[in-house]
Length: 120
Image (cartoon, rainbow, N blue to C red; front, side, top):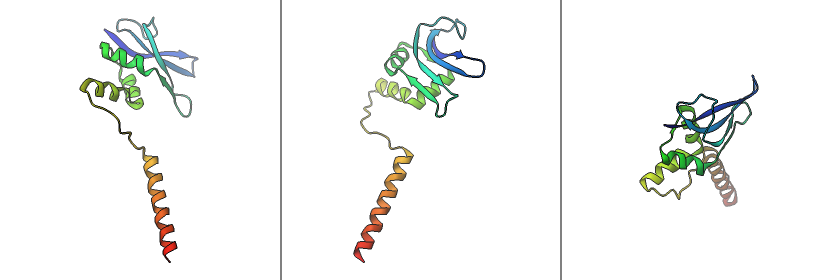
């Protein structure tokens, strides 16, 4: 069975990880079939780069992600894309982030205040 998991790299106190596809019987840092991206948890903000096309391709082939890789895929939206492709759901609407919603509320409230002032 093919697994998608993290391969540890880097020095003793500065680890970073490659997201790789490998046979489940191999060691954590053993030879891998394909590299999908990298994850660096030590930086601020966290660096995460994933080749979306490769990840979706491996998931379609039946590769099982580890718990950590699954959460990284969820954060980057890959699992949602795979789910939508599987069930034929179109994703044309983009979700608004919390900060964008707050900015919209602020801009609406400032517009209302300026309208009130002009009416006076």
